[in-house]
Image (cartoon, rainbow, N blue to C red; front, side):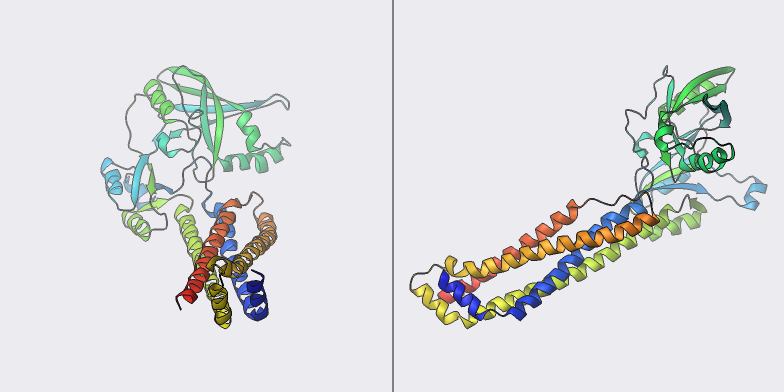
Length: 398
């Protein structure tokens, strides 16, 4: 074994190994940094609402001046829904069900002697489109509490407008979740009071959502129960960036709320850019792998006569190949550790800047980057080990 190590040290090319090391380190850092950056930045574009599942579009019909004068319908018929469902980009279609009764809500702050009340409205969507804990998102006739999801800009209007003008305390989302609203519902000569519990906030919907079970019961109880055509649909799509969606909606005079398709396109372009950068990193890593194997093969070629003699005097191919294999695996391990360290430092740098721009950004998890880095290390090392062993076996056949 010592003889093989001595041969390896005496003929090793430091410049070639340094070239491999730097190229492999560069490629590994590019790949791992691309993965981590994607995980950190993706929530900015695709986070959306915590309660609303991804890849859903809120669709309504455009309001035109002429249409308003001639009384053009802005609701969706069953035929409209079936046409949307038949499109290749559609996975499912749900309807917004509006309340057909009068609703008002109030909240009191005894500490400051303030009582607020306002008229409002409810809408609901099928439960499968809502991504909250279903233990909280349900209603059974006889219960006094109604789960509610409200637009986040309602809270912003209160905190940065009403509260400041009246010298009232600002409220966080967590505090709002602990406040019970007083909901008053009336219709068909009946008037009842419920407690409203806010379980989520929406950045995309300018509406107040309640469970579908409550909406169906309330429309039957406080209204005539007449089924009305929805004015908005929630459409599940395969890819919000699909060009066919924009063309179809434009032809039909439909529009989407809150630029979800633009966010989808941004996410799609982010994936494309990260994919291209990762491909460049993998190409660099592949080239460095080629450089390393070329260096090892040149070493083996220089020492081929001596290695053949060692094999003839009884050294096993495993012992002869082991120093070369150890060298390649060791270099790959050092590259992985340094690459992870560099990615950690670079991530700390850009994450601080992103958090200054987006205070709510927390960053993604590190384990996907670590797992992929380890898999790349194992893959490259296995190829190195097998290639060296094959070369040594070739000497035996000679």
